[in-house]
Image 1 (cartoon, one colour):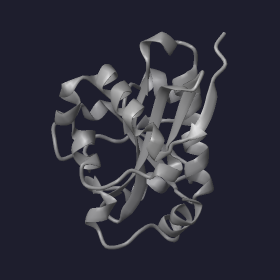
Image 2 (cartoon, rainbow, N blue to C red):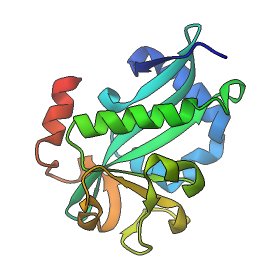
Image 3 (tube, rainbow, N blue to C red):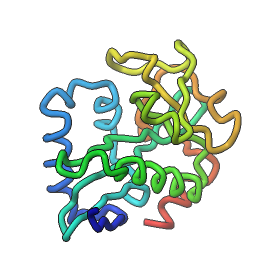
Image 4 (tube, rainbow, N blue to C red):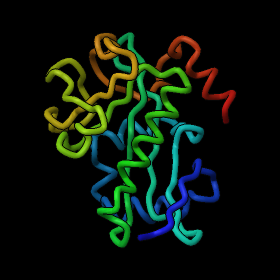
Length: 181
């Protein structure tokens, strides 16, 4: 129905992305656990994408490096679609594009807080309750993981934080992301 283009995010998209996130999540987004983690450092622009229609950003997804115990992963979100473009499969396509980019950059997994009925068909499953904690209250039944490499979840334990709070990056993944930026 709509001709949609999918593009790598650039700084030129920042204003429209903020508009979409404000529209989708309101001011309450700043109190969420995932937002607290994202405050710890930048997202990975090379692994973040937008959907546009007639030159206007209509949807966005971002990935942010996180650490939990010895494990490293990417936190997906926010994923937001303008109301005028909901229910067209745009959000799911953005998630698939982001997962493919994460795989190509050498990441072993992607985590998010979301609804399993929506994300399950995209390969996400619930993280065992208690394996990973977050810095603010969250419904841990909604903490989901997509293992790009089987068994990657096992290394993710304890409190999730932005990866900039830890000294090491996953084996070469940070360098591969930097090289693609």
